[in-house]
Length: 379
Image (cartoon, rainbow, N blue to C red; front, top):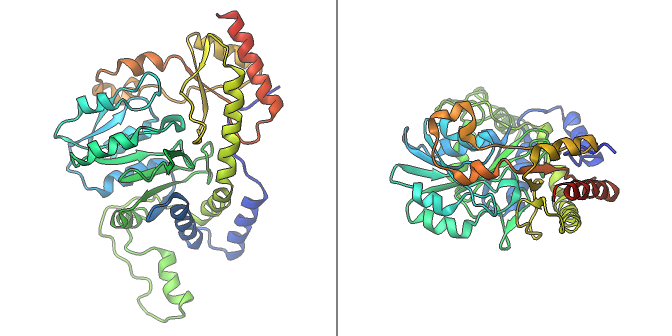
């Protein structure tokens, strides 16, 4: 067998939505983007959302919208994708790296408290791999210190924690809809919040800072059948960015959103099979205490003989991955090193295995059998 690591679950529904966009002949930031924003907010259970072209853009603009003074500090988990920390640098802020918990791989809240000081203005918890951060503990502590919490929800679209959607606990939440994610628009992202004023700031900035976008101006004239010689007029009040989503991506997102709960259920069913299949293994263990009431971006294991395991799986035709390493190991962040002993130790053990909706029972069994075969040789 040849088993890929990820595969988006797309089909005729997405194609039909794209055809509708083509028939309308409005491919840029238009009515489908607005429709997707509304549908996403309703699904998530928040007051407002703004669609952008990536999760990276979402993080950048969510931090930007708070207008933090330059040189202040942002608490970031040491083990995450680089975009989480880059959001601080984009806004001339200083990332402070927080260690992760041994068991969950999530931001260690005790280490966060130790590293917090009066210079810290925000924290960006990451629901890494889809496993929830204990936001019910984090939020009261943060609010008592006026510390803004902008969550990185790139791995957890559709996930929940204690019966409440991930992304609704925090001051603002940032989602990625890149190809590999739980919901995809090809590339894309979203910022969601109950702070509607915050979202409106981002809405203006995402399209080079225009006070009104092309679709807004078109609606006023064409849809409402008005005449106005100055219909074209807009102003630039802030240095903006070209971060808007387009209607082609949004049309894919609308189809995906209708499938999201189904996709989440399938991912959990696959993880359940994996967990049951490898429960007796000694050298290959699940990376998280998987909570099967939520959804996960990937299925991750810990293997002390990681290099041998990766090569073994390659020989079996099974794709694997190591999505992240501690951010201070990247040359860009060599001047931001702090004590993160747990992250530096355990990142060398984790490996990502195939997880996608259309993974068949035969393929899952094949992966499990390969893991068991490796485990027997490395007990």
